[in-house]
Amino acid sequence: MPQGQPLVVPQDGLTTRQRRNRPLLVVNTGDGKGKSTAAFGLALRGWNQGWDIGVFQFVKSAKWRIGEQTVLERLGELHEQTGEGGPVEWHKMGSGWSWARKPGTETDHEAEGAEGWAEVRRRLAEERHDLYVLDEFTYVIERGWVDADEVVETLRDRPGHQHVVVTGRRAHPALLEVADLVTEMQHVKHPFDRGQKGQRGIEW
Image (cartoon, rainbow, N blue to C red; front, side, top):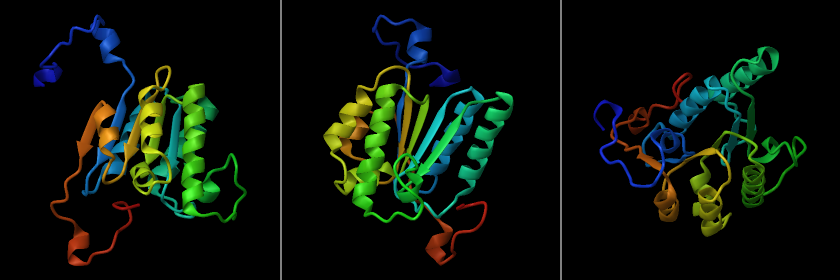
């Protein structure tokens, strides 16, 4: 894609502007580090464009707060105060499903994963957000907590202009098939390989 120009111009009857602004389904997968980091970087770009951002973390504990959450939530507060950027919502597994749970409620991961997806599905139908980050959602599909065919159909046929980013290893082949943009992070070398644990500013 030299100088940002596509190598092929499809005969789809759309103008360059229409084709350029179509909503995207993005998948960041693979065994390497950086899948979620890339998704949250995209969320920052979207916020700067005034998009409504919805982040849904499907595997991480509701008790674990990562740096991107703090930054994006502060940006959401800035939007409320000044109108700059766009609104931000951040939800995590368990008590993070704030529309249905009280803090401290204990349920199994399978029920939580299914519940989280049901809420995302409702929001897609309502066209609630401009960008959805479904962090580590591939594991929910892989473990059978949600039906893969139903997920693919919902994401493929979502109404309006809604971008969706899905992260996690071993993305389902059907999800890869319908995605507009797929990036596979390859594991080449990592400090974990030599016994080094995660560190502030790098892993969280």
